[in-house]
Length: 461
Image 1 (cartoon, one colour):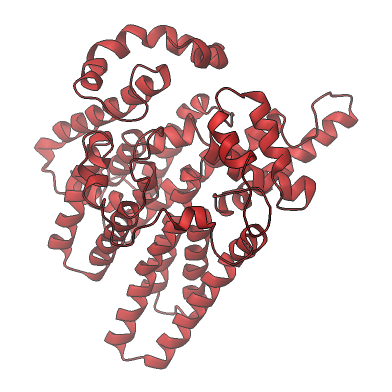
Image 2 (cartoon, one colour):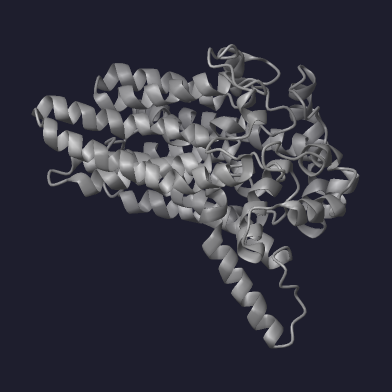
């Protein structure tokens, strides 16, 4: 699948922006789940209350849906951190910080509107504030995808249309689409941006002849941001660290490499410092809640299940990612270079950490969402396979991408319409619904989605 003579990096980027504009009507400015509430609570509490006490935020969302958030109440309203007596918050701080500029703009707009006679509440909860968070998440997701595309073209030598098709496929055929549109107030879209920025800056530092400590510090800062958005994504710092270490060994520049490594580590630590301070305030020590720590088994007993389990596994939810994983192995074999090896190691690290969590099934969530941040790595593997497709097979490859996208979108419909057990994939029920159940309900569901989403949530199809 080779580039046409006039194709360019910009053409693929414009196509992705156009696709983003087409998905904008799907963005749902709503906060419902526990993870969404926890992340939003950081932002609202810091801006309006200037503290990290989340009782007001938790009570607001619980009062709006007491039946749906009964479990949330028992965990987050009825319990406190033992050492500090504060409300529990398991979420990292990073998404709230990324949302903050948009949230503050929304607040300014609300204040101006009220000065002109408008009635929108300037309380941090009303629609403009929630919309600012949700649409900014979608924008961060797009920014991450554009960085991935640029990295594939600039550093991976992936031609068009393979680069754009790989990025578009991972967008439409994995849970990323869900977390950029239906549930954007989760941290996953922001995590794609942070990890994509880390990979982009790491390769930029490694390939620039004049790169110095500042360039590597930028890569470290991106790594700190990735960990700030989702702690597990700090493992992606293996990528720039490996690039820098190899550079020091091959160029025999020990002291220069040490300085750059210290700059990278210091920048990562500095950016992550707000999370440590938040931990200290909430738990009484610079580490997560003991309720989180006790869920970890570092031997990763669920390493294979998190990939292959038929009810919860990554590849059952998103079969395209099995292809992309095979592509990552193909990339290592084909290129035999450090970039490919480090990307594969980062992916293995994510498999390990996700298999180490007691709640590895992610029951109740759409897809294997903890792997969404690995999109920048999966893109390299999928793009390598697509670039290797002979021109005469290009249409077949494109048809395969469409099929994978249909599978994902149809699963989203099943999940939203409650045609499936949200706790797990049930076979063959899920497959049968893909063929018969979803088509039967899709027209009415689409109408309600665009005209009365709350009714759709209440009544189903």
